[in-house]
Image (cartoon, rainbow, N blue to C red; front, top):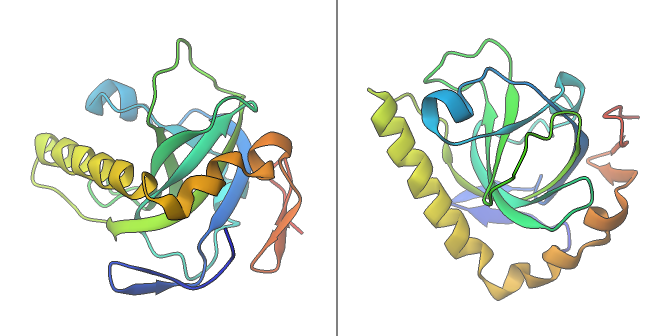
Length: 176
């Protein structure tokens, strides 16, 4: 998919598509335990490679782990207002089941679209309902023909050094 300005939800997103690659690390432990929605988390070095115009919110795209099958995903990007995170994070929920945890595995993500800005919720149930709505939106969007070729991207097979907004992100999460 060509790097053009993407218009999502009325916002111009020149940072999309955005590619990131790095090792999965333990997060806050909320995804699976509190929400029933497991997430894969990047190291802070990878999070720091996000383009400056990538606003905090929920995005959709594709992901794979250790070169495996490419799956749809939703990703929370930012400080997560509901939990008042101090650090900016990229929390990826891959829309398929895994038999085991994959901490230390190599996660590749291709962020393709924007769903909504980050919000704070009155309850955990309201947050979970919003995430399920995000998943429905992502599934609908990623079924569109315009994303068909993304599933076969060389990025998912071979990784990169790909230049994204002037920064090449390597497999170990470092950038140049």
